[in-house]
Image (cartoon, rainbow, N blue to C red; front, side):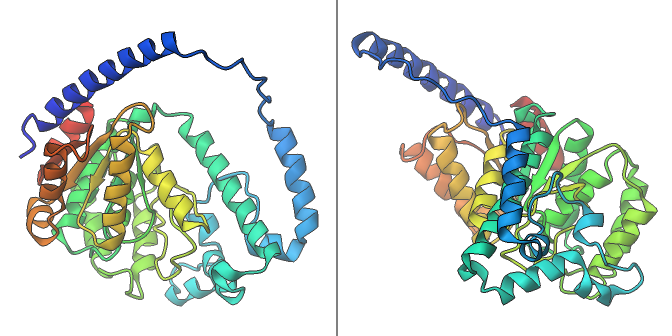
Length: 358
């Protein structure tokens, strides 16, 4: 259904950008530029680490350890779920991630005392720094996000479709990014985890997961770990970005790198910002709607120098159940939105083709 829409929109965007660049050059001839300012050299890792050590001393060991505080690396399943014992599903209540969220609630959530808030900020800063280091190894246009509902069941055909999109793109060298939770987010990282494996192996993994279709099921985490044990990680990576703000949503262990932040608004902005290779929107509700329009703003204003594809997966859902796509088309047609590279499809192969063409 996308036809050549994405290509035509991209060509139009390039023409507008060139026109704007020419206009900018003319303006520079007429307007005197301010004198060059001295630029403060960037802070080194050594200087940052000295500051971190001082803050740890200031905040105290009990606070910094309880919040995770400053971490040199991103989380993974082993560190985030430290304390979970395979074969004992209820041990998830005692794992590191659960303990941190429990403290988050006990300390008043967003209204926690200053010392606690500072420790969380330090933690989130360290995670974002580690995330930048990971992304430095990728072409920014090879980072693709998938956004969608956390309630999508493993038994839903859309779950498998999302996983297939992610699997194929990962095999082509893309880094797949999501909010790192259950539903469409888990499907994203399952696909990346299974990259390089056969369709038969993918089907076996799906069958294992069907024992616990919902993240609310007692065996949801246990079945994921069993699949990971049966199909050990290949060379491929993916990045999940869950938040401690939504403690009821467990982080998917299939993400090889997990940047878990306390600050949800910062986390949302990071996910949409770093996926410069485009974002695929699977069916979702309020959270996915927010991401669509926030992404549209970045593309409209060319916040990062160019617009990225916005691919809507699920024709019926996005035109009838949640008719966002016709609205976006109307806003583009009437000039309310500019530079948007929109497409709508039900086909995995078409999504891959569209993103590769970008």
